[in-house]
Picture 1 (spheres, one colour):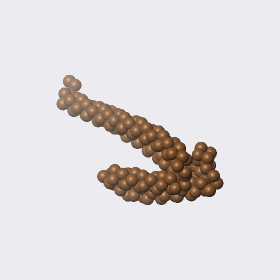
Picture 2: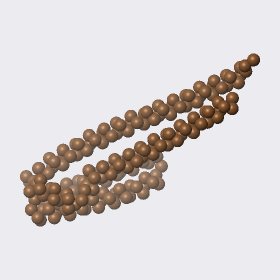
Picture 3: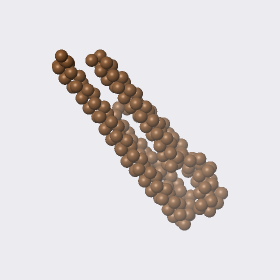
Picture 4: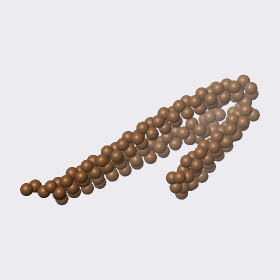
Length: 187
């Protein structure tokens, strides 16, 4: 009887440490996804971005400088929004996290709209059409990646819940078996 209880205790502790490691890895993965997301959303070096746009769109020096300033403003705004978001998320409870995420998303959309307006002011009509086409394609690819990530996360969450339920069922079955053994001593 004592051996069974000891064995159950060891199995329980082992399962807890295993789940803790899985959750830690997922949190690390989410951090990497956030870095990729921020890079896609404007965290790119302003000088690098203006040079790239200059080559793709045939910008003159004045336009490159204006694009660089617009990208710098966008980057700073996103960094400030992200810093505020981190502070709030660290202090918020689970119920308010969804609201905070939607507010962050709305803030990002506003920053990107301002950036798009800046680009419209800087670029001539043909350059803007070309840039907008590139930007739209980039955003579609980003959305597809985010959807795939969300689906993958949901699958992982489902598997973890399923694994936890299996562990609980095993523990319950083991306890029932032990109770039955206690009720029916060997003669």
